[in-house]
Image 1 (cartoon, rainbow, N blue to C red):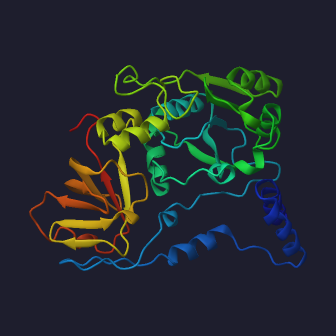
Image 2: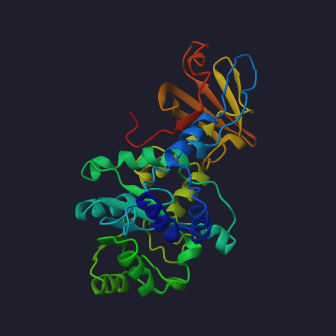
Image 3: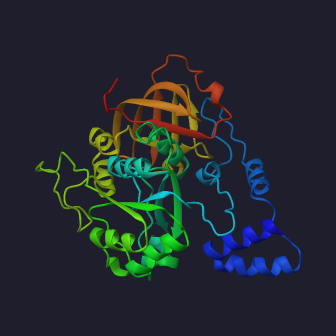
Length: 358
């Protein structure tokens, strides 16, 4: 009975529609199955992929979403998954060096979380775009931040935008305090929040003080290329003042400037592909349709000095060619059977050069 109360409390806050259906199921004593059981079933449903050489297509497909099972733990009564933590506020689309600075500050003040909103594109009718970081690759990136964050990996926490879009700045901070029960917040100096972005960083500090929360405002990490004549300081975001941003990362990818991309991200850019039904292997070369790409591709062209990883296993150096319809990976190894050990693999990662180019 105590367990079902915790589930009820969690659903009431996160999804009222499911909560109402859950209340009916409780009356019928038909409780939902544990999350762990559901996760195990999903893992068993992953389709088996096979690679064969000499031009035979790979079979079946697998979604990147299958590799990103959120490790949610149902909270205790009166708490939330971020209770007592320090939440960094932002969109965190590219997980660039500016976002990393927010996580670093959050880790100095307590347990770091990255709080962002999902479903904004659906609410505003924005065109759907490929993510900069593949969904299944975000945990790896955040894990790489641990050495900067006191050996703690920041955890992402999402709120449905449609549930909070009409909140005033005061109501938003009140929700952080009373419902999410966070201990403090971190934000960039240009952060805006509340209905129609009515609140700014100074308002955030004032409201946090009112509700007994710590507030930490971080100076923007500036793009050292902002003065270059070929990189205007104003991006798609009108509030951009030359700071590192996801907009700049997208623009650099579109230009194929992978050195600049790696400087903005603080790491080499990784393109992730699902090894699904369109991939073909011929000797040392694998070709895949662009539909296999799980995040934004760089500009079409030839990229030398890349590194190939398959299911996080380092394969070796390669070069990458992106054309209008396909991506082609050519291994440097002389052994044409190098793909053989990976016939049952699910994901391909291509890391593009630069950032200390070793």
